[in-house]
Structure formats: structure tokens, C-alpha cells
Image 1: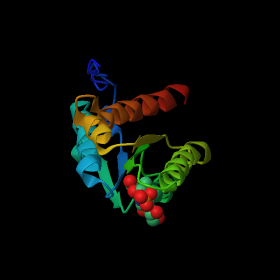
Image 2: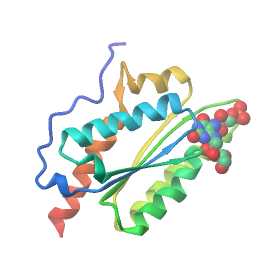
Image 3: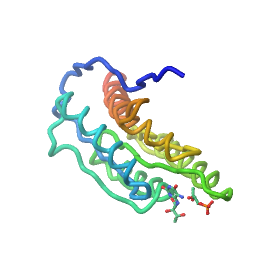
Image 4: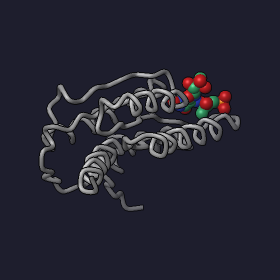
Length: 161
Ligand SMILES: Nc1c(NC[C@H](O)[C@H](O)[C@H](O)CO)[nH]c(=O)[nH]c1=O
Ligand SMILES: CC(=O)[C@@H](O)COP(=O)(O)O
């Protein structure tokens, strides 16, 4: 299968990006993946003009905890967008399904129940190799895509205000 880098993007050139404040919640489970997602996101935010002091990173134990932490940040009102970063890799039991479903619903709830865009940057993979490929490997970096999405959603919100 041809490798497709899903993270190629053209600079967004967003107006007033220097005023944007971004919260990043990153789970430490599978940190060999989540830290690469985090770094990919931060690289894009800096490229697009977000001052590093406007980017706040908050670690949590696992993907399941992303919901609580992201909701807290969204409701706090100090950020223009929150990016939830995690990596869930299937094990032997159905625990994978419960964790993935819970965090997807939890981040969705942040969008519905708060006024702050919450970006779902959680890999839900069957194999470790799939996660590696999507966190700076042959298939790009989902953290890059999440950062682009965050900026686009902030601009969306400002355009409708
Ligand atoms: N197996 C993975 C987990 N499991 C831990 C849960 O996310 C959670 O921390 C625990 O159930 C306590 O509430 N977390 C991941 O992020 N990735 C996994 O592969
Ligand atoms: C996604 C998980 O929680 C997973 O790592 C748990 O592994 P297992 O299903 O083998 O207990």
C-alpha cells in the first residue's frame, strides 16, 4: 500500500493567531506515541504564530482521563481551543472498546457542553505499529492535523461571533 502522509498541510496564515491560547491535554499511557503527537501539534502552532507562552500542556495518566481534564479546561475559559492527545492500543479484552468509546464521547461532550472547541487527537489502534505510523511515521502525525483543526475551529468561532 502506498504510504500517504496524512499530515501535509499548507500554512494557514490565520489573522491574529498570536492572540490564540491553546490548552493541550496529553495522556502518558503510550507516551512513546503521545509525546510525538504533542510535539507535532506544538510545532504547527508555533509555525502558525502562536507564542509558546500561549500553549499550555497538561499531562494525565491515560486516555480515559482526557475527558475530565479537557472538560475542566474548556469550562475554565482560559483557552480558545483544547487539544486532547492520547493513544489507545488494543489488548486482549474489551477494555479497549470501553476506553475508546468513553474518551470519544467525553471529548464530544466538551464541544457540546462548553463554548470551547475540543479537538479529538486520540489514536485508537489495533497494533503499536499503526500508532507509530500516525505519530510522525509513514502516515504522518495526527498531532499536526489536530493543531490545524484547532486553529480552524477558533477562526470559525471568531467568524460567526
Ligand atoms: N490501555 C490503555 C489505557 N488504559 C488506561 C485508561 O486510559 C485509564 O487511565 C484507566 O482505565 C484508569 O482510569 N489508556 C491509554 O491511554 N491507552 C491504552 O492503551
Ligand atoms: C486499551 C487497554 O486498556 C488495554 O491496554 C488493556 O489491555 P487488556 O485488554 O489486555 O487488559
